[in-house]
Length: 173
Image (cartoon, rainbow, N blue to C red; front, side, top):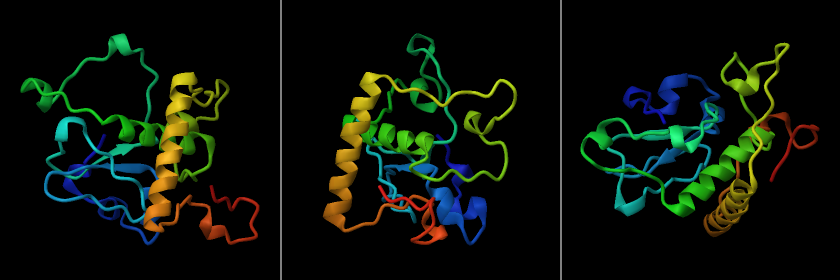
């Protein structure tokens, strides 16, 4: 997760195409009002009515393959005995957005080496392979996002829009 030191995505990237970077960041529910996304990304809800104290995002382009037994709570919340985690539906949506990002359904800006997906050396890293439980979360998340967009009449931005309707890379899912 990242809060950009309390900056917005636009402030961080300071570019006319900042909306494309929004495709990398899924906002988490904030205590003092919702975090908005120029690319219509979903707003992730935390379990037990919790909310983040400042604008915070999950960064899809930075991931680590770690066995669960090696994970440990740390940070401000752990010191106070609080466990902050996503509610189940939000986790499904997040896994779906991650899947879209790693499979190319959503464009990834390639300005510089940014994540393991960008490494193209002799030991090129394979894209993450999701197991059956994660793929079930992808299906649930896709259904939830489809329903949200249908209900709100929102368009799903993919980052491929700038190429125009006849470009071979233009995709809409």
